[in-house]
Length: 288
Image (cartoon, rainbow, N blue to C red; front, side):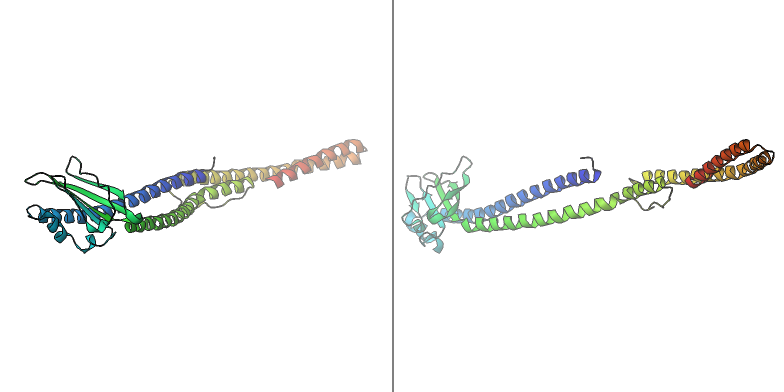
């Protein structure tokens, strides 16, 4: 690829493409983490509320039912919880119905967040948290269906990619036009050189970018020097032709005298040389 325009276009296109790809990936990851953090905050609040209600309750099962909101009562509502007491007792939300969800235990830090496939094609975001109690630790897992949120994020990502693709195409067209406009003075310089080859002159643009201005100035100086040199050559050729006219006229007169003196052959030889000189002079004058 020897074209400077194509090289610059390709380099800028690769840079823009990389920037757009990084931006698209960042937006996708950012939106997913933002939503998960928001849902996890609500789940953490529900887990804390369950713990507060059952930690000192005489009837833990009744306390769990009272603490759970309506969404945890409706079958397969997409909101579920599981409470594991120190003695091994497991209390589950009524919303699980006849499903048994495989909630993982909290990790060593005491809290973990994971994704888990749920019933009816649901995608659950699960927060598992360990709480301290007098008779042993209590592990509470709270889950919420985020399938609709994932679908919204996917739609947002598709629209973002589409918008970024349009923006990338417009930026590529714009940068191509800017490169064409920035390199246009080089085309003017090439055109000026072609005119100089034909002996013509032209003015180069004075408002070219600073990167190409030195070259245009050099071409302009070369053009002026060429015009001056051609002018001097033409002037010299004109002076030479005028200077030769008088000697040629004298030779023509001498040929006429030889012809009158009875030497036509010598006169014709001189006339032929005079004609060759005149032809050469006319040719050089036209070329100049």
